Amino acid sequence: MADLAFQRCIDPRCGATADLSDTSFRCPKCGGLLDLAYDWDRLPVPKTLREFEAAWANRSDPLDFSGVWRFRRLFPFAPPDKVMTVGEGQTLCQRADHVAAYAGMNPGCLYLQYEGMNPSGSFKDNGMTAAFTHARMVNARRAACASTGNTSASLAVYCSVTQLMRAVIFIGSGKISYGKLSQALDYGALTVQIAGDFDDALRRVQEVSSRLGIYLVNSVNPFRLEGQKTIMLRILEALRWEVPDWIVVPGGNLGNVSAFGKAFAELRDLGLIDRAPRLAVVNAAGANTFYQLYEKQGVRWNGGAYDAPKVDRYMTAMDAANLRADTLASAIEINRPVNLPKALRALERCGGVVREATDAEILDAKATVGAGGLGCEPASGASVAGLLKLVKEGVIAPSDRVVCILTGHVLKDPDATVAYHTADPAHFAEKLGKRGVKRVQFANRAVQVPNDLAEIVKAIELYA
Ligand code: F0G
Image (cartoon, rainbow, N blue to C red; front, top):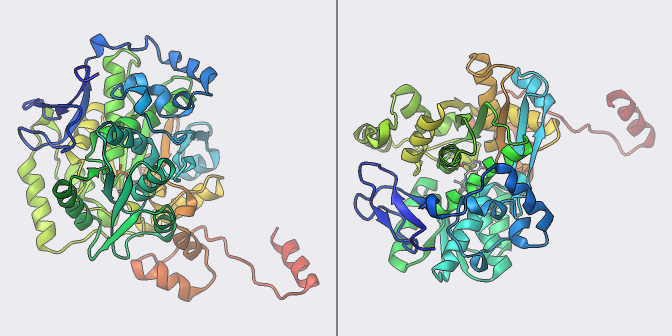
């Protein structure tokens, strides 16, 4: 296995490699990010993507039941007996005409990839199963992450279900929604709340992990991104192996977009698809580093030679001005995305664009998604908010085939949802108004009625 799969620096000008068992997740030569790389010539690569359909007949095997591991031939780093699966990746790619109409798309052209159906309620399980498997391969006893809530919930699930490792999670104070915090606490993770935000927590967890030798599962961990590639494989499968025109995804730490770009580049290199879809990343306007750098400052991957000094200057200026990420979409409240170089590479490979959406736009899009049947958390709504903009701008045509990724379940952040729909102005002002949301378009207010049968009947006849 070892020489068939290895870690490699993403900068083609460096190209240094690291052993599969290396858990520093930094290039040993230049300190850059690492990728998983495979010697495909010596591995049993499928001839067509249809070959994966056979796994469905073998669903009693947990590896074939998993919506991640049944594609394992496309990320062959783990011996099957080391794989840790909790049945992740049984998710849905749903045609969504109601949301299509909202975004100005034609009926039948928009699909929502609903990753909230994962065991921990977000897309993170796709990556966590892969990282957790690697952690097991290197005999880790403790695993850590900094998190805006979903990575921690996912890690906590894998630790509690398998009882193999102790979860140590770092969160910023007041920066995590209750749905997610309650998961970490209930699943028994050691929860370290630091005085700071996600960007602070991520810096600290990297220091602490290397000092204490704790396995790190944030998305700097390239094994996680291997698992996240399978979100794209399931979309292709749902579309009967036809490549859509666009994938639209919210951007936080930029792990997803990096994984998606890698998936399509590999599928193309292996001759399994003939073209890649285009990628659109949507930042929250209050955490828009990637939008600023890519769209406003023109930073491009440039074959690895991206303008790193410009990125550094941007980050330094941000720190000097004490500009902290600030959005109600707390999952993507991140100003220093660790996967920025990988995301630049993904956009170069797939002809990508980046947009930003305000909290009000995100919450309206989220409510539309909910009213269309599949609820999601605020960050996920960013993908639909971004789609609306791209259709208005004419970048995406109403007849294009588009898949928006719904990254997390509606129950992750009930506070945001209830505040959006509240009939109480004080509640609205406290939760949303204070954060800059003045008006929402699709509030579905509860109807207040006296405890009286006739009044209740009257209200129902009036409204329904
Ligand atoms: N959507 C949700 C629901 C998320 O939880 C996250 C990231 C993202 C989108 C952004 O994804 O980082 O791949 O660009 N949440 C992380 C966490 C940071 O700690 O749970 P990305």
